[in-house]
Length: 387
Image (cartoon, rainbow, N blue to C red; front, top):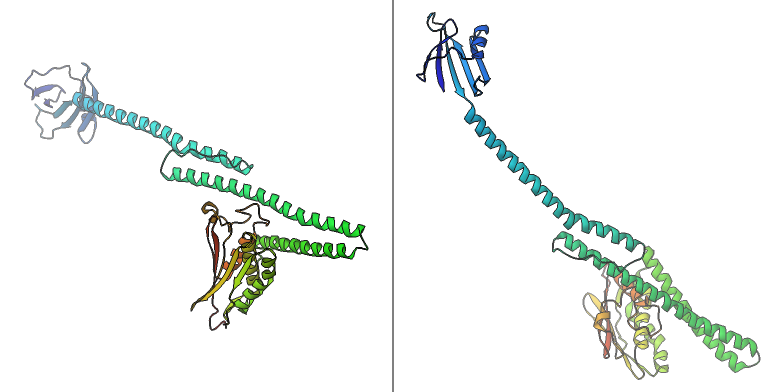
């Protein structure tokens, strides 16, 4: 920084640098100070030698004719150099940020946008019925979890589609068998009007097959009501053991005809539950019927009961073919049949489970392949205010 003294003629007479004053100074700040009523002028710009400077001139009010103004001037070269360094630093940081944003953008596209786009594409394929599509799981974050859930959904939909197709095939076969028997025996009776033995035997077959058709249609209707939320229960106080005994009596003769033993020790006590009498009997009939169907000749079906303070427990166990552990978690699913060689629609057990759940109870299945199957039904005993 340099201090200069200026006389009344506008010439520099003294400088703090000690060098002889030059008359070639360009001093716009002095001119501004003379013109300005405040007596102060500033200037920032380049001198004739190309150096950038900043100067401030202030007029003196002492009345001294030798010195009219004082001027302070400094070079801005270092300031410009420092600003240049700062600007380079800012540009470098901005460039690094831009590069980082580009890298992050590419990573974002590769790790998030592309998988989401793939999910969208595969979702459209699933909507069109192609359930075999899967998404590669590349990460363990939330997006990876989404891919896993999507693949799980695709597998479940594919499994449901397979079960549905198997169900349609099974039901078609189940309907065709009794209809064929009814049609065949109807034609036989029509062609043998005078044969009483043939007529009696044919009418028995027609009656049995019609009953089987009726039961199957009733199961389908129950399933439709459950799916549509129209499954209503007419609950009242009921003796649960009375309904169980009736169900055992209904199937005792069927078990005897198939050389199977149905064991049941009828309880003497009366246990009251609050439920729908017909639906509870339907559950017992379905479970006992399954136990007989899946038992081999000379097998045993055991129906047992137990009562606690809060619940009644009915157990139906057979020593039949059993259920594989891989199928055990699916047997209560709609349309699922663990053994396709046995007649049935595959929805009876699902309907039974829904009925028990609607009574605030549970239906549990335990089994070991080739040894046994045990079904445990637990129903809450009616409360005193309900009784």
